[in-house]
Amino acid sequence: MALPRPPKFGERRMMLRRQLSTETLPEASGEFKPTPTISAPRLIYIFNHVTFKNDLHEPRVGSEKDVQALRKTFEKLQCQIIEIKDPTLAAVKEKISEIERKNFEQQSALIIVLLSHGGENEMIVASDNKEYSLHKDVLLPLFKNETLKGKPKILIAQACKGELEADATLMKHSPNEYVKCFSSTEGFKSYRRRSKGSLYIQTLCKCMDELATEKDFLSIMDEVNLKVDKDSSAEGYRQLPCYTKAISKKYYFR
Image (cartoon, rainbow, N blue to C red; front, side):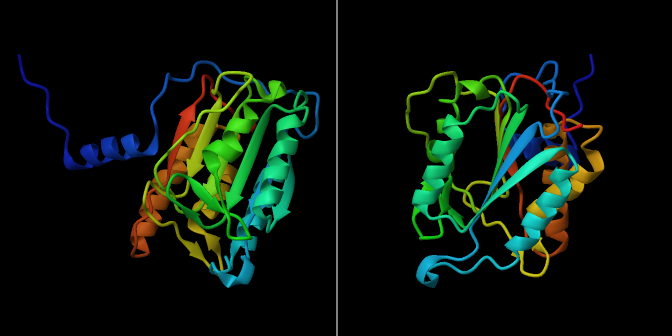
């Protein structure tokens, strides 16, 4: 019996990239069914940190281009956009607490986009220079909301990324049906172009424009991750986005 052929270099690279791009959990079966009777079945909250108190962090020039692209793309997909501009840590926590209590029975999914500087352990910098945790302060409170149970909770972070460190918290249902999308892998920078916005968000919007009617969200994110890796290499630097997931079904924006 012939021995199996070892993977070629390109195949090994693709296998490694897939390992980096996803935290593997049980494969999705079936798909989520959006509520057909409402005009805006999804809410998108954009926490857009552009300027920072006392200039302790560089202003994120070009972030408005990302917000414009997100609005243009997702409003076409029946999403209601809510932008929170330059929130302090207290304002972030207040808005997340509001989301935690909000009734989402008429929405098929929740999307939260975070545009800011970032750090290790999935930390995001608020506009008063205080940090908050993507996992502890943003994701985990969502599991206290019964009306989000069984619905996709999608977090998209355009920021540098560190290692995951999750603290325990009281939740009303098990932590599933979520996707966390990052513009870069652990310990690496993500890049933002002043005149065009960030490569990651702009690529995400372009891929959603082209593929949202035919592919599920995770398949689109695979395309985004590959394209950002390829395009960043062509521009002379390396940026490899990734996502982690705990989701049981495919989710479509069509």
